[in-house]
Image 1 (tube, rainbow, N blue to C red):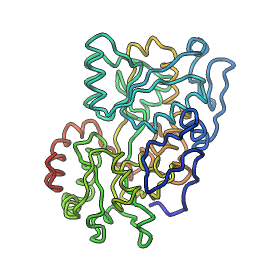
Image 2 (image 1 turned 90 degrees about the horizontal axis):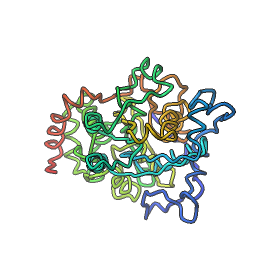
Image 3 (image 1 turned 180 degrees about the vertical axis):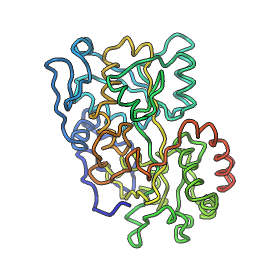
Image 4 (image 1 turned 90 degrees about the vertical axis):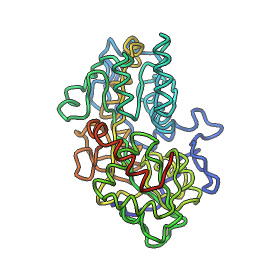
Length: 380
């Protein structure tokens, strides 16, 4: 359970008035939207040695041949992960490697349409793609979008059962937890999942529709299996506001249109960093988790800079930066890292970490969606 430790420090260039918050986190008048400074403040500096390849914090990320070939390159990344997270990641990656990322960001379902269309026309623009839905990752693999690629850390990933497949891998985990507007909820603050169904929050609860994507399927399954179907029904009786995206839900919570919500931890944490009056909660019963799946394309295989990015993502440095943003690293051979030096999410091997696996997704997602829709009277 988190304890209140006061507002996180405001990062330079990211102050946003809570009454008119739009969580784009792009600071005007600063190159890269101030992301370079934010990335430096969010996580400790790494030790980078380029005397014989690329070595970061003692790990070989790229041998000399790959490193020399990658210099001056650009990585074309297509991603269904939030833009704020990818912008910060790009800033951190450039700090440590000097390499740029060209980002195309779309929701995973729209991203899938674009990727498959480009692939079919022989004009795929991506070097690397990240998606939040295992069905999409599997389709990319079957359609030849993803091709085999081995990072220097594959043996470690395999030993730790991180979700390494033949043509794609799990780069880190998305987490759903809870949060509230601490400018509104000033007394008897929520600490557990059961607080979502407290009658005092009737008409003030926010949830994201289960049809939004894989992370919400994971949350629904966690709540059904851990808290019971009746817990969903009682949320439905709270007259909640149902959102069609995590970003709009977090915006509404920051503006005070709702007081409490189940939410994407990373999205809400980014809003808190931007100055929103939010406090996040990691209940004792744990959090739901789902994979962020990442694969290399044939374009990327021919681009040394893309290979460096793939390797860096799975290095301790890349994994640590993901943790500092409010994700859970795929690798478990690391010391715990707090998001913003404030929130400690459970490790991937913790009993509080409830992963919705690809196999469970295939077995339970459709069933859980129907249970969720009935509980909330949702017709979408």
